[in-house]
Image (cartoon, rainbow, N blue to C red; front, side):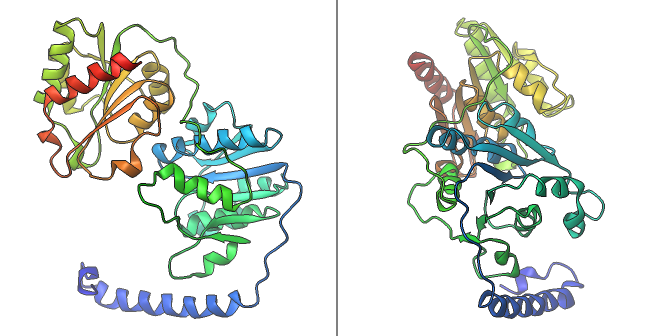
Amino acid sequence: MYRCRIKKPVDIIKQPWLDFERAISFVIYKCLAKIVRTREYPAPVNKILLIRRNRLGDAVNLLPVIEGIKQCQPRIEIHVLASQYNAVIFQHSPYVDKVHRIDEKWLLGKLSLFMHPLLLSLRGESFDLVIGLGGYSSVLAQLVFWVKGKYNVGMLSKKGTLYDLAFDKGVHELVMDGKHHVDDMAHIARNAGLALPDPLPYTRMVGNSLKQDNWLAICPDVKRMESRYAINQYAQVVTELLSNNEVNKVILFTENASSVYRELEQYGAQWCSTQNVEEFIREVSQCEWVISAEGGSAHIAGALGLGVIVLSGMGHQVYWRPYAEFTRVLERKNAVNQIQPGEIMTEFRALKACM
């Protein structure tokens, strides 16, 4: 195991030093944990801050928890602290009262979070609860701590670390067969003393365009090589759907203008240029269905109420699939191109029939 961590010569010195540093940190944590006292839970809870950083799918999967909180406690004022990238997701939720964007690269990054102007201003909001959503992260723990809410909640590390002391209530990982990513965040919220309905609502975003009859979106770009579906197989799907008049238009969304998937324009797909996530939401919300590689585009489409077919080669879609009503997943671990165009067509027709 140790040898696997040696990637370059400097690691021969670096890795033992990191192990020593972690050991010292753990000893200090154990000593401090015995004397640190948690604060009393505030009553009543009127105003909360939820912190959800990083990816688009992570943000979308928090939406059922936010809606659930509002359903059970409609008077709670919900603020969300998000990254520059995923804040747009929360701006499309009718259940979020205010969204705050943080630039974590400000000044010295995580070394200067304690003096970040946004965090300083959020301290003045006097939040009853500040909740870090997601798995354990030292940066997330710092964000929670520096806002200085009346009561802090977040996910604990697996082995124990100084950052665990940032929380008045530390939450252990949820152990449950067949759980979804949404279940993990609901688990943290419930441990924070918030009531949630069971089952939770589906993800829900408000689009800003009118839907057009029989428009299909194709979102093929994905960073994970395992989930990159072949252009010629996408082409078969596009050609058959258009030739059979099963869709009126196929809109192609790509990560950038130089994507190799623009070759699908030769088969009748119409490329749509989008410069950012907001533009993507506006344009894709015109469609009724989407065929997408796993990732943020699939989660956004599901939350907008589109019928979604996800193509995945990762083998983890039980946990990561879009938490939406009209979703189909076609998955082949490490072999996404074994999914035949005919399978996609069958799923598309079944999805179309039930919507």
